[in-house]
Figure (tube, rainbow, N blue to C red):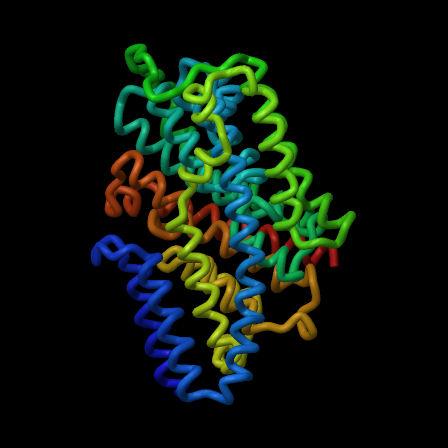
Amino acid sequence: MITALVVVFVLAYLAIALEHPLQINKSASALIGAGLLWTIYALAGPSSEQVAKELSEALGATAQIVFFLMGAMTIVEVVDSHNGFDVITSRIKTKRLSTLMWLVVFVPFFLSAILDNLTTTIVMVSLMKKLLDKRDDRLFFAGIIIIAANAGGAWTPIGDVTTTMLWIGGQVTTLAIMTGLFLPSMINLLVPLAITSRILGSKPVIAPYEQNSSGQMPTTAFERNSMFCLGLGILVAVPVFKTWTHLPPFMGVLFGLGILWLVGDLIHKEKEDIAKNHFTLANALSRIDMGSILFFTGILLAVATLEHTHVLTDLAKWLQDTVGRQDVIVMIIGLASAVVDNVPLVAASMGMYSLTDYPADSFLWEFMAYCAGTGGSILIIGSAAGVAAMGLERIAFGWYLRRIAGLALVGYFAGAVFYIVQYRLTH
């Protein structure tokens, strides 16, 4: 049974990693893998009652992450439908590419810390189309935006889905992860940024011709500012809600979503139904990426079978015996996230190491959050931010490998070394 489970999981993993060459959506591969793994476990494993109980436990843990992501993504879509992100993007103006680079990358670094790196990348890459006319310039900026978004998402519990998973699982706490990873994440960004700014030098910004935006409903300044501040305020308040009430984070997000829905209805109550429909939460729900939601569901349920059959525990022992050093093991996991999705990697790690042996906020979990969150920047298929930018600007895998991968790799190791030194000095 164990051999069959490992083979099915590896094949599902390969299908996810080779999503683009195979032209098979990774969500389909994850769901099929989860279905096959639980089927094999149910037929060849212990009693059906025990399997059903373990599946219910896995579903409960998975549902918390899924509901949190759905709520957060819906809030972001509501803000975007009100053109709320124009509050930030309309203030970025400069005539030098190097100066623009410094302005641009710090926006996604801090924005992805309170939103998510996928949404932040979409907003910023779309902004570049309004600011830059030359495609080569836009591609270069898109690559640095990916690094910035992934680095910014790693140091807060709501910024990157892998850090969110560790936070919800109790492996990290809000204040510790923010203070521990802020500087390493900043180093991860500053090193490639410094190299890039020297390459760009004094090259001028060539702006595109003015074009009227289409497909957007007009909004007032009050509507934009209100929904932007309220939406981001709700997301920022979720960790506070969890600390104060000790309820799961998804409850705070759903509570905030209800408040946002109420405020939206009050703001638009005087409008006609046709004009009001664009701003409703029902419309926002129709625009969230349900494929990603199903992918997370499938991969987390798939990993749960390996956890219950103790495959991950055996893997942890093998890594410990073969490699030995914990920091090297975690860096290997981070590098692997450049090839395959970091969600199953972190989910597997959570199953491999127990909180009894490695309590909350220990070196393992904080370093895992950094490596898994930033390692995906090394290849364009290694993170949701990279895949989004790849689709928006049609970035070729080879181009990113030649122009951006080296920068991301240098930043990754620089931040990792900084964190190790910082941890030893402070502990």
